[in-house]
Length: 335
Image (tube, rainbow, N blue to C red; front, side, top):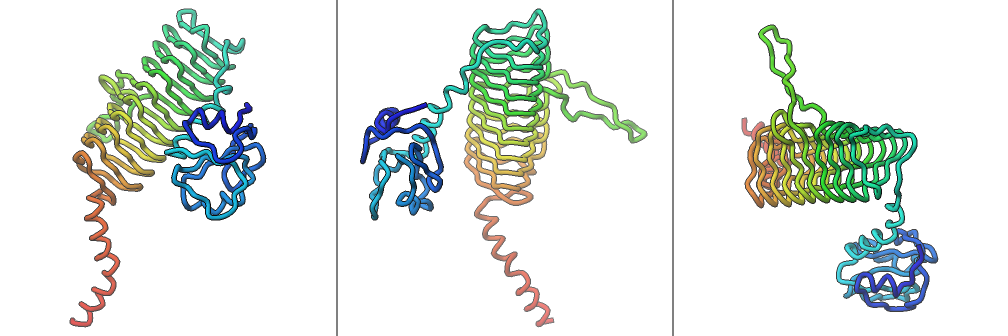
C-alpha cells in the first residue's frame, strides 16, 4: 500500500515538518529505516537514530526538537506510539480481506457460516456451530459442536475450539490455542487413585479479546470460564476451569491461573506469574513478573515476590536480605 507523508499525517492528526508529498510504502524500525519507509520515535533511548535513519518519514512527539541536521520528514503527534499503531492497522487492512470456503473443509450440515467469512483448508466445524460475518478461520482449525464465533473474529491455524464455546466480536486467537478442553478435576479415591470429575460447563470470551499462541483456557466444571471484553493474553498462558478475568486485563507469557480464581478489571500481570485457586484479585492490580500469588489482593495494589507481598515492602525487605551475609558475620564475631 502506498501513501504520502501528508496522507499519513491526516490519519493521525499530525503536523508535517518537511516534505508532505514524500511517498511511503513500507514500515520499518528507526535504526533499520530505508527510503520509502515510515518509522517512529517514542522511546528517548532511540533518539540518536533519528539523525541517521534512511526512513522517508518518522512519527515523533509534538515537543521533539532536533539538535542536529535531520533528513527525514517528521510527523509530529501527541502520542507517537499510539499513532504508529494506528498506521500499522492501516497497512495491515489488506491481510484481512479473505472470503470464501476452501474445498478441503469438513462442515456439518447444521452449521451456519456467513457468506462474508473465510474458512481455510482442512478446518472442521461441528453441528449447530455458527460463524458470524467477516470472520477469518485459517487452515487446520477444529471447531466443535454448538460453538459461536462473533463478527470480525480471526482464528489462526491449528486452534482447537471445543463444544459450547462462545467467542465475541473482533477477537484474535493465535495458532495452536486450545479453548474449552476439560479442566483439571479429579477426586482421590481411598486407594490413592483418582476419579475424573466430569467438566460440564463451557468457555465464554467477550469482544475484542486477544489470546496468544499455545495458550489454554479450560471449560468450567459447572457454569462458565469467562474472559471479559478487552482482555489481552500473551503466549503460553494457562487459564483453569471457572476462572473469571475482568475487562481490559493484560497477562504476559507463561503465567498460570488456577481454578475458580476471579481477577478484576484493568489488571496487569507479568510473565511467569502463578496464582493459586479460589482467590479474588481486585481491579487495577499490578503483579510483577514471576510472583507467586497465594492470597487475595485488594484493588489498586502492586505486588511482587513469592508469596507475593506489597512491592514497597518487598524492596525494603530485599535491602535487609542483601545485607544478610554481613549481618551474619557480625553475629558470628560477637559469639
